[in-house]
Length: 319
Ligand SMILES: Nc1ncnc2c1ncn2[C@@H]1O[C@H](COP(=O)(O)OP(=O)(O)OP(=O)(O)O)[C@@H](O)[C@H]1O
Image 1 (spheres, rainbow, N blue to C red):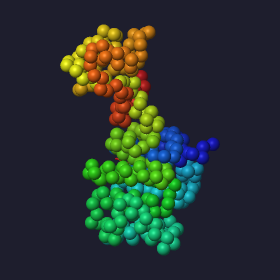
Image 2 (cartoon, protein in one colour):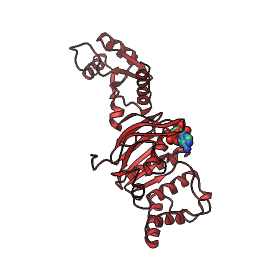
Image 3 (spheres, rainbow, N blue to C red):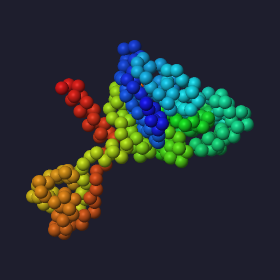
Image 4 (cartoon, helix red, strand yellow):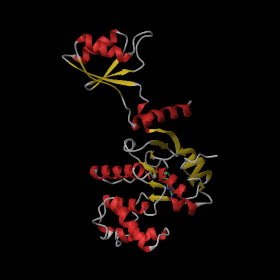
C-alpha cells in the first residue's frame, strides 16, 4: 500500500526499445517537494517521464503517479500532471498567450478562465511583456519559459520538467532554476526535474535520484547526499601556516592532504583515545599561534558521489 505522500512509485519498471534497455527494473519512490532526476545523457530520464505520463508504454513492471496506475489511468494522470518536454515543440507562428490559452481550454477550463489563467502563469514565468509575440522569434530562454507556463496552465499537482535549463546561458539558467524553486516551494506543487549536469540541481532540489544506464544508482535527500563526505576542511593564517599545521597534526597521528589553500582531514581520524579531531585542530592552531579561519565539513558535490557510487557498482558487477 503506498503512502498518500507518494507522488511516484515504480516497481520493476522496465523499458526496452528493441535492443536498447532504457530502464532496467527500476524500483523508485518519489515524495512531495522538488526532486532532481539526474544522470548522464542516455541514462533513461526522459523515458521515465514519458512512461509516467503514459506517452510511452513500459515493457515491464508497474508504476503509479499520484496513486493512479500508469497502465490504466493515463487520462487521470495527465489531468493532474504538467509536463515540460525536452525538445522544441512550440508552434512558431503562435503567440505564447494563444498557446497557453488553447492548452488550458483543452484541459477543461472555460475560455474566460483559460485566458485569466494563461495571463497569470505567463506572468509567473516572466513572459508578461512578450506573450503576444509569435514564439518562433523567442530566444531559447523564452521558449523554455513558454513551455514551463503551459505545464502549469491547468493547475497541476505535479510537474515533470525535462531538462528545463538545456541550451540556456548562465543567467537564463539561474532564472529557470529560480522558477523551479518557486514552483516547488511557494506554490507547493511537487516537481520532478531532470538534468544531465549532475551538480546543477543540488541547490534547488530536496531529493536527488541518480539514474545510470537505466538503473537506480542512488536516491536520497540532497543534504544526505552532500553531507556524506566525512572530510573536514581546515584553513589557517600565518607564516608557513599550512605546512606547520600539517606537520603538527601528523605528529598527533592525524594525516592531512593539501587542497590549494586548504588542508583536508578525515573527520574520524586520529589514534584511539585521542581528543575529538575538531578540538585537536583548534588546539593545534592555537599552540602554533595560527589563525584558524576555516574548520568545516566538506560538502561533496553530486558529481563526486555519482563517480564513487558508479565505481562501487562496477566493482560489485565485476566481482
Ligand atoms: N524512441 C527511441 N527509440 C530507440 N531508442 C531510444 C528511444 N528513445 C530513447 N532511446 C534510447 O534509450 C536510452 C535512454 O534514453 P533517454 O532519452 O530516456 O535518456 P536521457 O537520460 O533522457 O538522456 P538525454 O538527456 O540525452 O535525453 C538511450 O540509449 C536512448 O538512445
